[in-house]
Length: 390
Image 1 (cartoon, one colour):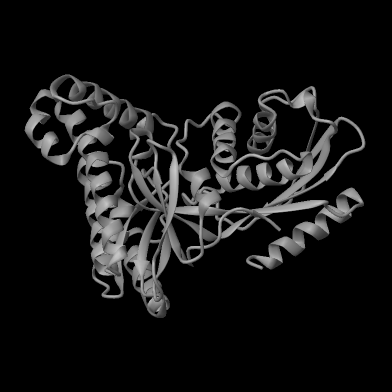
Image 2 (cartoon, helix red, strand yellow):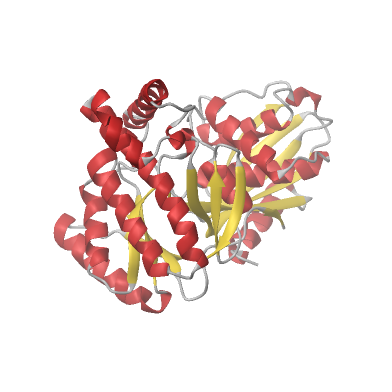
């Protein structure tokens, strides 16, 4: 089993704390975003992958209406009843779980037959843009669905986690993170279509892996940068709806050629923001065709193009992320590289030949240290299986 040692530690801690074995354990992986940046709320396409690091959630039924939730890493426990499920102001880590529990019962957790005792533990590096929060929501929703005998499809479960993030954790995320964690497959990418909310897997082929390089730039989306980019995209879509002789509801409906022809009617900033998701959609569609033909280097070139678009048009990169991508370009065994996730810090995702992983990591670390005086955290990642009951 993937991450067996984390599972063993969780089960041992659960037994010691609660004096019983967990009845159900579920696992969900983090995710990397590979191509298609800021396209989810523009109803576009994204390539992502479930990663080989994740989170386990263990649960057993309680005899009464109380719920106990323990964070297995620092052994802190939150207690509440079925009648008092609400966003927490303290120990806010619990909101990802309690929010998921709340929406699993359509906002009426008091209807649950009994409470529960739960604990979670994972090994996803925090703040690296690998979506540890979605992994926690997805293993929670799988375990609690099983505990209460609730059957829902994967997309509905993903939406429950997303709703928890919006309403309990206060983060207006798209569905990418939860869907990637749910639909991941070993050795494959997840191709998401956020207009129809449909998800398919596309094989990557052998002899390739990803490398996450975590910059030490602070990864923060809450300072208004994310919101301002989103607002610009919405403004641009509204403008194109007025000038194009077709139906436009989101930037998904606008082609690069149309942007070139009509951008003059937008402010310079809004025009620059809009071209990024428009180009990303076209790159994902092109990337799918390249993967079908086994052209990994061609796919990697699209990743470099994606980063240049982030750097120059969307301006959601930063000096540290740019330095990582620039260093990657000089290494023949790196096929492509770009920032991953929201940007403004966090990590870069590199498409690499895994046989050269140590050499690639050493070269990137050397360049980064020369420029910034410290070393980035680097890990090799293989696309892996999505969320499941253990």
